[in-house]
Length: 434
Image (cartoon, rainbow, N blue to C red; front, top):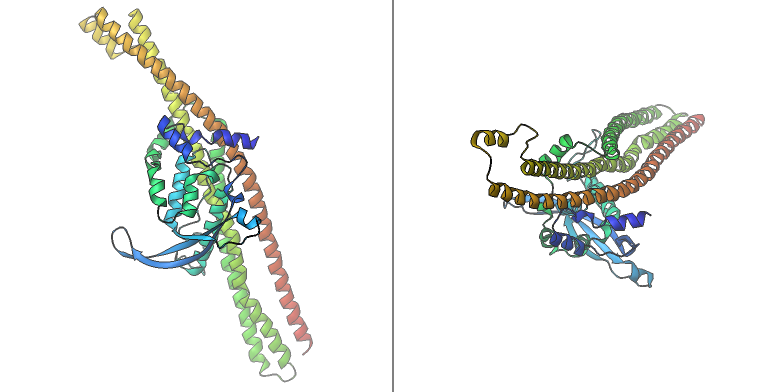
């Protein structure tokens, strides 16, 4: 069922374009039924590297590039182990790819990119986007982004994605040739549709509200986690004072000295262990951040539906108005107050020839209006069908991912507490030997 829905919706992204543009959109897709790119290719972001170079205004800048490695699955299954193909990409190129996917497949909840600068950090963690630990976490998240896209039944078969992974130098020219930037909806246009649409789909309204709540709750959770990390760091590090005191005390005692010194070593080890613990916590924080950013992707799908619905309502309203004008012109009776009615009273009725010419023009406009309404109706129905299929896919993915992340976080906390108990148990045994 889901496969059929995805296959049907794969052409929806071009519904708003001309026939030529729609054909070009189809040509950007390498459709293989039941297949995704991840089943045909291994993909990884293997490493990050800091570089210097000139920016667009010819000023020197420092930036990070990421090494993407790909390898054919077929070659591996046949017993070969070829060296992976590799190329370097900047974060800004990942942004171009995602913007292209958002415009081309507006009915899909496109996976988000990791943050450009660190957010929700506890005070001992660097917020510098050149910090090695931050760059490493972003490398992991960029790989996750590519794996998400490459495993999606529609996105993974786009030729632009394949070019991004395999063509280092020609890729930008290819993606800009699609003209995706000109097709992007303006924020003002989308905002206008939000407030002016008369019959919004209740499901999309609820989903938009849900995305707001999801963003709010994950933000709160990340803030709480950052405060807990701050306090936890302080609690662990203050245990180093036990180690210092026990070590100094051991120098004063002969019989108790060895036991005190050993207990002090355990306290020192306990204080030092918090760095690894909080580094592991960042992994779970990054998983929550992904869904913080997913909330905006979900809203983008809902906003596009509002815009599609608004265009349908506008076309329908224009058609009704044209039919009413035709009826008034044919009967000579004006139902409502209008400037046209006033001018007729002041300057007299139009000649039969003028009325016939206007009727003929109105007939043409009505035919065109009916075609537009039919096209917009089909476009809206197909958008709803395709978007709802992908939203259900996203919901299943979200439930699975967040459940695993939160359980993993709980297990990590339990393990941390057990290590603390073990440290104090070891210290107690040392003190027993005094």
